[in-house]
Length: 113
Image 1 (tube, rainbow, N blue to C red):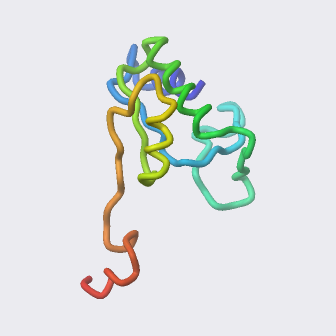
Image 2: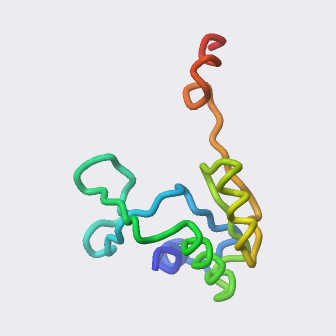
């Protein structure tokens, strides 16, 4: 499990906050094969279309239940996805991290850069 391995590497008993970074699932890569598994658009990255965001969120709730993290949240999702999460979440997101800079905004805003 990625969370347990990260805690071990950091020498911690739990995280204050643990986030889902992207709203897509990738096929599992064992740490013995490649660690970290990386986020790259190349031949090594394979999507796992069998895992839903809801399943991932419930797994995150399990990390809270197991005392591996105190809070959970999400990154890089829009309003529609966060509204979905709020429908099925037993534990509500503590945070929504959104990356903001001119090159990730709408094209018409780039004229001001």
